[in-house]
Image (cartoon, rainbow, N blue to C red; front, side, top):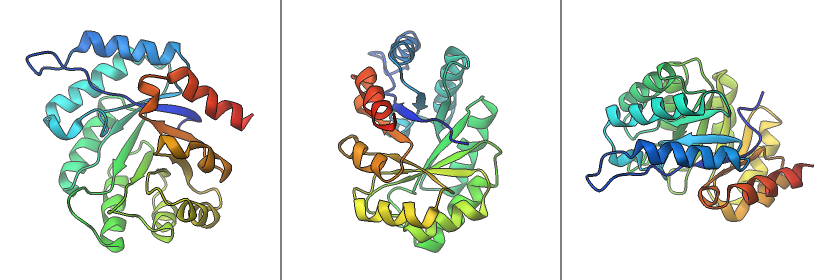
Length: 223
C-alpha cells in the first residue's frame, strides 16, 4: 500500500533570527499545507535544511511535526546521511518520534558503488519497521536494477523519489519494478511525465508556495 498518493511537500524549516527553529511558524506552515490539500508532509529533508541541524534538533522538529499534524496526513521524516551509522540513528529516532515513513537519500558527498548503495539501504531498512522511500539524486545514482533488488529484499522499502532527471531511467525502473516500488517525482518540472509512467505523485518543493495547485495537478491527472 502506498504511503501517500498525490503531492507531498518537502517542507522548509523556519528559523528565528537567533537561528533556533521557529516552531510557531512551523505549525502555521503545516496547517497551510493541510488546509490546501497537501497529501503528505516530508519534514527535515533537503529543503528542510536537515544537513545544517544537529541530530537532536532534527528529531525535535520531526516530533513537533508529528504532534501538530496529529494524524491528518502521513509524516515522512528525512533520515539519510553520508554515514550509515548516522542514517541508522536518524531512522530509529524518527520512527520512535512517530514518523509514518522515512525518506532516505543516497549518501551525499560519497559516491557509493551499486553494491554500497544496496548495503546502505538494506542496513537502514532492516533497522526499522516503518516504510522507507529511497531518494535518488544525480551523481549518486541508484540504477533501476539495484533499486528493484533492494525493494525485493527489504519488505519496508516500498518507494523511490526519482530526482535523477533521466526519464528513460524512470521508464526502465517502472518496467523492472512491475509494481514493487511506488515512484514519486523528485523534480517539479517532471511530475506529469513520471505520472504517465505509473508514478504515485510528487515530493515537491513547489508545494511550499502552491500546495493546492500541485495537489490538483497530480489528482486531476490520476482521475
